[in-house]
Image 1 (cartoon, rainbow, N blue to C red):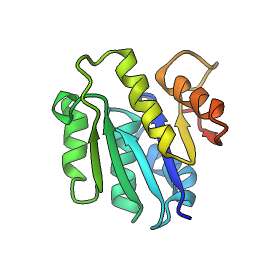
Image 2: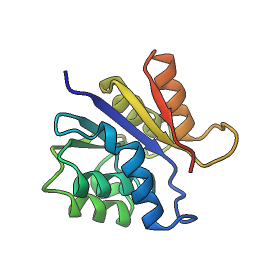
Image 3: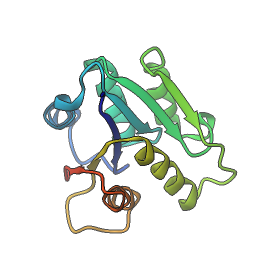
Image 4: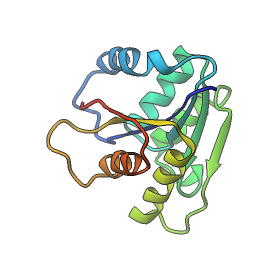
Length: 152
């Protein structure tokens, strides 16, 4: 049975070089990214866009992008990443939230985790907090599913 993986992570990625992320993703996403694997990725900036670009360019895994509202509501950088990878994205799921506030992002995160076998999370280094990344990782644990936490 193919593995389904939800990706979650911080939007704050400017503190590292792109090459550092490529190396990190090779180490922690690469082993899971078989051609049979299926990744659920949020359509935001930061880790979402970086992992989408890396997975689309370096693997044959199936990719689904999930956004809380519509792709048109996403920031320009996120829309550009989605457009660049359009030919590699198997599905774009727009959840249609009327307002892009915390409950809509939590619903998107639950949607991805509910369809995944595990979650790989890339939170900012430091103590566990209340960010969307940690909410997603904790929801994964509450569902009894494995999670791989890779602080950045």
